[in-house]
Length: 456
Ligand SMILES: Nc1nc2c(ncn2[C@@H]2O[C@H](COP(=O)(O)OP(=O)(O)OP(=O)(O)O)[C@@H](O)[C@H]2O)c(=O)[nH]1
Ligand SMILES: [Mg+2]
Image 1 (cartoon, rainbow, N blue to C red):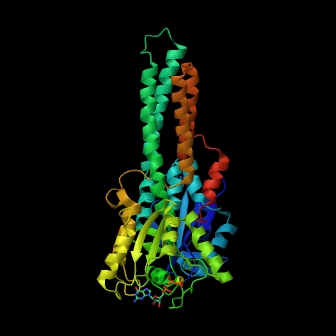
Image 2 (cartoon, rainbow, N blue to C red; image 1 turned 180 degrees about the vertical axis):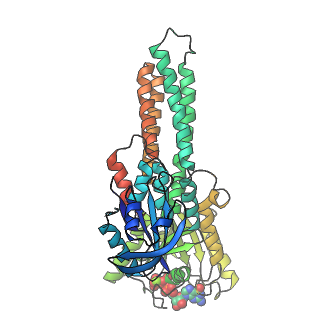
């Protein structure tokens, strides 16, 4: 296998950069260009110069990790050079001239996987960790990187393999005095495995929220304060705010972090009967956005009564079955009695989720943020010890593996011969194994590592 090299850090105006070399020629290459090559020994870091064609290129620190005790399982040399765009690229070019080839995306991690340094789910967690946007996302990636998901998958899978072995003995060596598995025994086993897989699968909804965020639409009548709320949450003047009704014409989106939760917020055109062509299109979009959101923040302006038109709008939104928080805005401006009247109106049919706020004066906004976090992070606020599926490849494989167990269960119920049932269980175990990279298709591995950046 060829020796690869890449810059492992983001180039730019930083203090240092790191050039990483992995493969059997790593030591030969550094020996050609490092002034202190004689001192190099594994797991130590040495100061010296990179010298090429008789010229001093940079003063550097060089470390050497001897195979198999390195990240990739191969000989690795790392050169810490000075920051900036020029130096690191220059040294990389010299390393390439001395015999390395430029690494592809994720190629170091791919080698670590191929050399058994990590399983595929741990490799995927590495990219998740690098791409984490919140503390919680990083925590989940980090726990997966240390093998937590792998442990669960291996444990479920090894149960399947045990039962398959038992079935094989029963079928192939009926003459042996070995406990015969009854259909009831197998059904109990299948039920347990199904429940474990179901539990993992159900964590994906929360995992997806943590990774991709919650899609939130801000809806309401013109002038209710929708854009003011967006600006408040984004902490910048993202949308134009005026006291002219119909200011926002198009959907404005912004991504905001509230603690560990990412909100993808859509501010919309105020909904009303309008003859203006442009505004009408905007209003259509306000309703359309409902197809892709998880939460609606419906803003009410206490200065206007909830008339028939607004009631119609509300029932249209409520019929979508989405989560809704009603926000009575402008609490800085109106008397409390008005809020009580509106609360009664909103809660007429059933108790709703209502918060009083002032988007302009930043009142009630913390309560709103906490409420959203409770809605979507639920268990995570108290407990993050359970495995959480965040990767759609893992989710798909768990689903397929689960389907195979359901098939096996049905076969047992229909008294299908046990060696046929074992084919379904075997397929279920095979699919599960692909999460950790067992029996993995090379195309799949390529797709996983292509998502990495170069240098990792
Ligand atoms: N007093 C007070 N005024 C507010 C508050 N929120 C918004 N406003 C004012 O209400 C007016 C309308 O605010 P916007 O945020 O533009 O309302 P909008 O819902 O986006 O309106 P459209 O885009 O026209 O649908 C502006 O004059 C804001 O300053 C609030 O909490 N208190
Ligand atoms: Mg607006």
